[in-house]
Length: 327
Image (cartoon, rainbow, N blue to C red; front, side):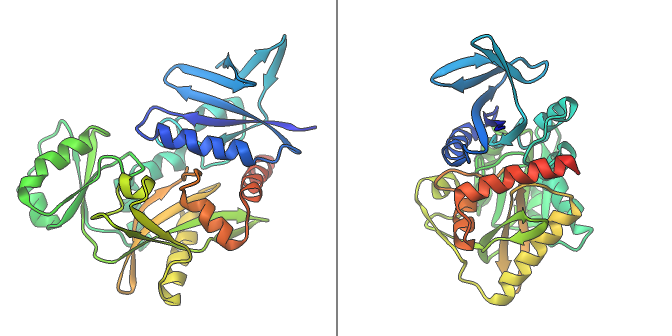
């Protein structure tokens, strides 16, 4: 009997447009011989299923909906919500209460990785290198002169809990601070000020296959812009080169670090980790536990390079979800 899979899309962050694209790609490539997919839109308190060009409200008491006098329950959840409440662990806690399995990290792990500053600070205790950084709160006092002296220029100003490069600015001159902070605080009440690392940007996807942890081929980011911002990421202003044009030594280092992080943080599902390689050292930028799955996204490119089709990738993710649930 086919299992009912809820493909979650939407969310309450600036990444909603990316989420809609990811969910659409998943729904187009899911194995319908094994699973019956339902797109579930979650935005604020509006939770509804889109099925056969009709919308049906979700009963939040048990995450079900009714149609034609039948109650439809879900066997599992495929998370395609980037940002809150999908990537920060909020929805995972809800599904844990209902005992409904999902294909991504748990609530605790999601909350940790979504907080870039806290995650990188934690991983430094395990000798995972990341750029020098400082964290400031919107309503707290902070000394920009002292921060600039500590971090140096140029540096990056970015929301602590946001993705898809929203609200990120590169500050090269003192007169750029005000606009950079204003833009970042639009997306989060916490902002990271991070030292500039001059090197090659790469990203590494990690998946599980038959109980084995696999680091996918690396993707090199070569952007026309000053850094890999939203325009570069989604509007064709960057080259995403898979496999990355780096040495075997650097490739092996990044893949080894990525698998080590996956184990340290007890991660689950498809995860993408971003780095800057400066000379022979890889510096972790951030961890994405709900990576983009749109046509422009990196994980699908890496999977294809490894020899895994989108259908196989999504099928693998769902199979892992149910096998972990049984365990």
